Image (cartoon, rainbow, N blue to C red):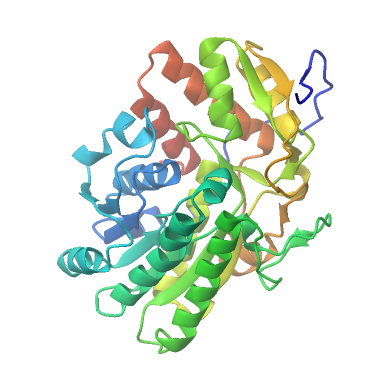
Length: 378
């Protein structure tokens, strides 16, 4: 049997004091730009898709979603009652004919592509399905976009795991080699490369839609209930007042707050809508000081929620996961004038606030709306 160790004491890392949410994002992003625009989100029933949908609804956009039913129970899509404020279409991204038919009917101006099989461990269990969804699903979407004249801006949202990771403690830049090792990461590398091919082969005229890739860090925020993820595991431990098991406690990841991520997607989609020249690949990750070990993340979450659960380390020997992963966000800062507004301690505090409120019976819609409006200074 694998040895388990319970963490009884731990010295938390030192962070800069948490300031109120910055309003700089609202100065860089024209929030009203999205009002009345038709926007299609694939994968809108997932965690990030639900946050993006709610943000665009608040912005006054006409939001459409195309996805399978929500993958978890509970799930943020249903918790926020998003079907009441957007048009939600149940569909498989692998079904090209249905996807094309839906897109021709909607005639979107902006597309955010999030539909994916998003879990590393599931990709080992279902590798063929993972490639079908993440690679051919992307191909289906981009092929359909060729026949919709209303489209001006397309964002394919991939992951920080697309890079060839040789275990070095470096910051990955957009022009570094793409070659994820596990089926999930590799399939997203393929999706990324496929997007490049479509941009050069079919969207290379200035009158055609701008097409970019957004590579995000490990996103945290309220309402994530997916399996094999640290924050959802912490939520389950918080709810049961039992334990959370950490597979790779010393692994470092570019954890970032959900709205820093959404802000990057919106800013990129807006800027390339009016200036196709900036299309390309962009990293949206935290500042260097905010890279954090898995164990630190869990301890901080536990602290923010009153230290209600125990932590157990159970080393992962079955699945190959990188020890260190860091993103260089310089390009997004320079070209888009994007900045992550929330440091890691504040990100964990806001995340814990959501789950605490959810378990206490507070209105989760009000919590999400409050965090969105505070972030964008609405």
